[in-house]
Amino acid sequence: MATYLFAFNPAIWSWPELTSDIRKLVRRGHLDTDWSCGRHRNIDPGSRAFLVRLGVEPKGIFGSGVTLTAPETRPHWREERAASGATYNFTKLRLERLFPLPLITFDELMAPPFRRFRWGVRSSGTYLPESIADALEDLWEARVAAAEVKGDGAAAMKGKASEGAATKGVRAPRESMKRKG
Image (cartoon, rainbow, N blue to C red; front, side):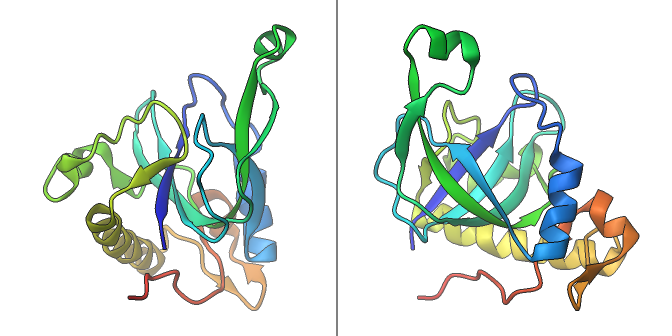
């Protein structure tokens, strides 16, 4: 399965619903959301997706899931750009893990084997080479597990989450999205 990186930059959009979206994810086991994929048009439904926080510290990986749709074009999400006729591509993501802050920092992404990739992507929907994606998947799963053990991550149990889960992060009550192959 192909893996893509989707960017979030709080300097451009603050995601004011992030805390409530994390709570929704806890209740439902996932969060479906439209997300920009820049100029990228060749993203297949079912591809692995990681969210990367850019622009404002702390930077790093803070969410994961899969793509539900192929990219579609619509008027730009920024009103001033839409008024001039600008468009953008978007895909629907199903987020299954989401944290308010990164579990994997940019400093960690500058170490081998990750440093071969430019993590400060210019647009969402950037393809991750398979060797980088495999290593990221392993580190992500370890970090999510560690966050859960420490109580920093969410434990969704029987469809109900602990109070701390809604504000500290979440893992959907599903099997691992670990790559097969």
